[in-house]
Image 1 (tube, rainbow, N blue to C red):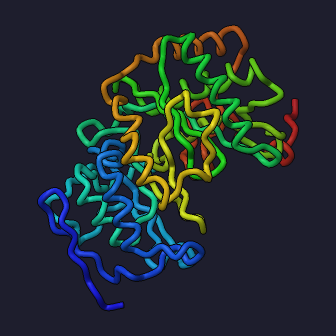
Image 2 (tube, rainbow, N blue to C red; image 1 turned 30 degrees about the vertical axis):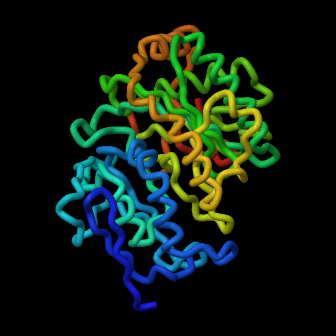
Length: 337
């Protein structure tokens, strides 16, 4: 276990300690397998992470061991890996790593990082997201097929709004759809846009889609998790390995692949061959940047015509202006007049 390998990538030398340490016992995948995987999809994951403050989800002893999220850049960070300063909802700050090359991804993998969680901002402007990320989250009684149905409903809506989304598997049962946007809007405005999109989907298919924050109200539906757009909430990057026994990965898809693709098709063993064949199918995403005016107009109509208010933030988030009571409905005390 004391062995160390040196990997050469992009003119950098990355040291890999204990390369034979087993990270996925069910499949027998080692730390070296993880590093080789990220090497094989290097351009793709760097495209997803480039210049984005990134939280590392670390499993130093593999998926069966303890894990933690590392937000602040480690003290032993190489000088060639840049950082970006982000502000948490509490007002505190942190300098997070901002990968710009494959060597940085391998350096993190050596620390036991399986999943990369990038912010939807670039280090040059950490207050204005340049991605709107829609998380279609299956609730108990639903599955990937239901999320896929919701993704097609979302695509129809985006088409009507003159927008284009890029879908990917979550690595679990869900689907993520990314919308590259002009970095002009705040986190609050981007979250408001996600709520408006979710509410319109819910209006069109109330029996299949919900924006209800409280689990007791969601039912057997797909939850549009609008709070994944709140400050300090992140989504696993494309190509990230997920910490599950079979080593699945979050796989970018073309829309025309959505009907045939299954989450179990994409893992640490199969993705390299797919990547070698088709490359990064989201490679063109950074060439687009859409405006949110039409979506924000939709949000304003909801508020004006239907009296819709803001929706609850995550429990650890500071109370926001205009936010409704953050109390589970079954526990809420009736208003006294």
